[in-house]
Image (cartoon, rainbow, N blue to C red):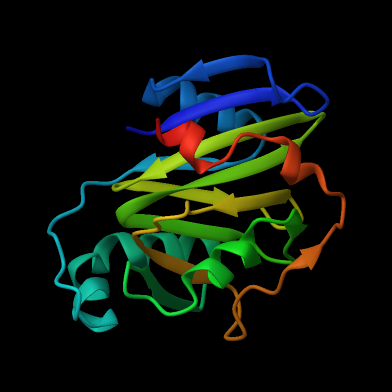
Length: 184
């Protein structure tokens, strides 16, 4: 179940909001410029499903999001228990950073937590199957897929190079609860 927990950035032990109610999550995130939608995942995909298979299953939604956001490149990220260097992949996303383009993900399988630092607050968003999140360009954030990561997501990009992280080196991410807290 999707979940939003909001903290003051200086008080990561005390939540000012903690909800699993979709409308509250979407409204709260919309207030900070973040798009949050729920799509219906049409099918489970085999571990060897191709990007083409997955994208074909969601063709209408993918075309709509591309048209609305001007995205020119779409791909699939899949992390499973067999993924080599899974710990390194997780570590890459755990430090706060920004991107010069939107970060848009639709979760087909599994889960992950986006941490969005906006206006003195940290919004922890547990995204699971059927969730679409669009984090606007230049929003400070980090992402945790957990130690036993299992996820598949459609990613949307404005350019073929994909997203390039610009790390803030703030260290703030280390003070906040991890994926395990959100998924519990």
